[in-house]
Length: 416
Image 1 (cartoon, rainbow, N blue to C red):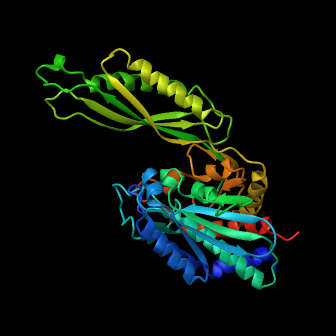
Image 2: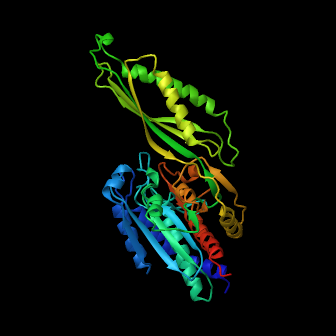
Image 3: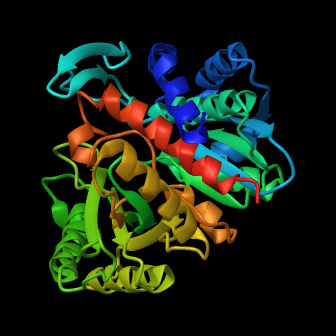
């Protein structure tokens, strides 16, 4: 039996078990924030060990985790050596955004319903990216099964299951790399089934604190109105946002930079001049931009717009600076292997593209490791309702992605 045939047969034969594995992961909350994901890592380890996989657990120190804005992080590594050769890693994250409002079904129920394209599972993280805990695990199991039937592979396949993608990846993939615990030659990270992603936006988060002086609302002239000053800054930011559409990216799938003010708080009471306002800015950075220049320009814009009131105190703090992902040498070989098998399994051409999101894949790229994003999911974030109510995954996409990832990994681990 050919290697690809053995892989496909195993995935089909074992697919009910893979689906049950995913459901068990969805049922354990791992919301970030608050970022206490240790229980999920414990459950994932139990499930992996039941599959006769040796699991390394790596707890990140409390001080490091808290500095990243989280509570507890345990990263998991599974390694299987087929022989001498390259190390190929598959990376997915188990932390998810909180479910929010508007759910039709229990966000932790892993309920399966019939859909137009077959069964669909619903739940927070079912698409981003607990699905790829399942697809990558069963890709490894399929390769192990194929080898027992005469298939020949070289090198090592690793699973990197991390827990801080929603907080930036510093205590997930970056921590594993910085600690010298992993050093793969190529990586496939969580993605969707109908495109291979080799580039994505970067992201800058700034927190702006505007401080004035409180006073009685009946005597506003006695105070320094922080909200009035913030209004001037916000007006300047929104005027700047309108100009960003004129900046165009040359990367397929990415259009222009964006700016969003996503959080604001301040004031004491209705009858008090507000003494302080704090708001946070999300600025997406296209691959062609220099993140440091983007930050410097924003800081200057904020400072200039606050100068009309010298009594105001202004503090701008960087919360996050995620570099854009750009293709690394060798990424084309990974993408080509995925495309070849995706066309065979899905029956459609799967393009290489970029996305306007940012991911922790950038940490592998920063270490000079070729990486692409590919995994189980539909054609778009919107279709999956990722980061939205009623997040869902068509189970046939899970089946297809598992086969494709396993076959692509086999190509990368093929004996020469």
